[in-house]
Amino acid sequence: MMRGIVTFAIGASFLGAQAPLQCNRAPAPSLRREDTAGDALYELAQRFRQEGNNAGARRTLEYLIERYPSSRHAGSARDDLRELGGTPPPADSAPKP
Image 1 (cartoon, rainbow, N blue to C red):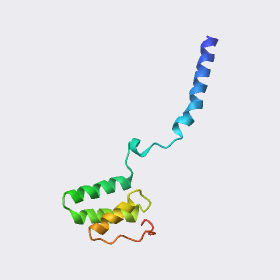
Image 2: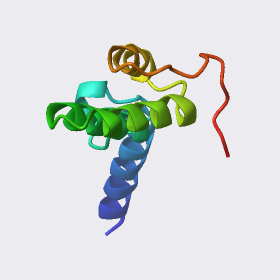
Image 3: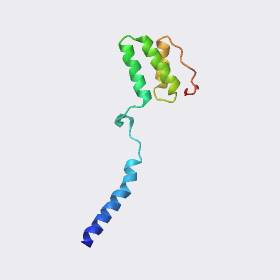
Image 4: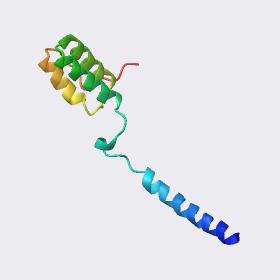
């Protein structure tokens, strides 16, 4: 009985010591399970462009740039917006509430 308790305690302490090492790392972007809002908006804008809905793509890209200026897609969104004839908001614009 005592041997089983000691074995369990050692096993639990080993697993507990390993958990922070496993959970502390940020996953690689290719391994993420969920998109960020910026990812979803950029993908939506690309779908609008593929469908020929340039007005929808422009509005979506403008929204992405205004609301999520630090998104990894903000730079590409600015370039795409220029290609579509839009004027991107200033780079230092703060997100609107």
